[in-house]
Amino acid sequence: MAGPSVELSPVIAASTHWLSRAYPAGTPDTIAHTLSELQARQAVTVAAWLRYPTEMDAALVAIAGPGGSAVLDWRVGSEPEDEEAEEEGWRTWVDEVVVSWAACLLADPMLARRGVDAVAAAVPYDGDRPSPQPRRAGGLPNEFRRLLNPDQRDRDASVLLRHPDLLEPIAELHRDTLLYLLGADQVEIAA
Image (cartoon, rainbow, N blue to C red; front, side, top):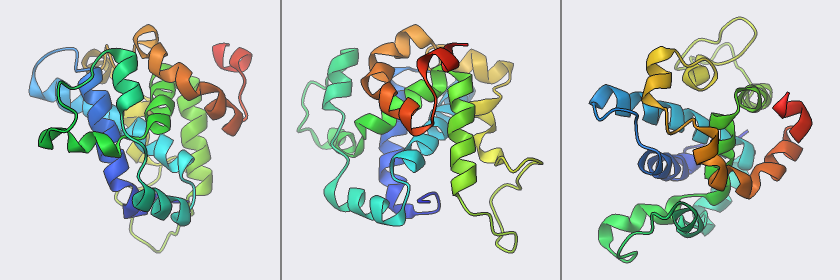
């Protein structure tokens, strides 16, 4: 699994940045912004690891590039005034599929649980190797707590980021592929 691969770092960072800008925190304070961005990063990380499941996949996307944010920008009406501007270069590292899958995960807690379970099952756990966060009983990494079990402060900070209706234009782009990948269907997820 590509989880530990640093090759996905630019894709994860740019895709998180795009989500955080498109769906800003519920309040303008720094803590709310940080909590909202953490949730976006966790969803994007799970989506990226699902999208690029091997180190070879991660290396190839680092070489070829993920495609950029043009379609996403158009769907939410946030096209930059000048795409060629130097400060807009990060947009080329946004992965449309990863952002769409992350939107699905943020909007649907059951789908998020399936995504994290799939990642946890695929990322080998080496008990001898130190990890940034210890795994909880059941093997789920603490790294995805804010995605799976947001507390009240997390929910308040991510009102826009987790709103299913607002996320729908992005989530619907590649939802069917994610559902297929996770072995879920619309009826089961809706229940």
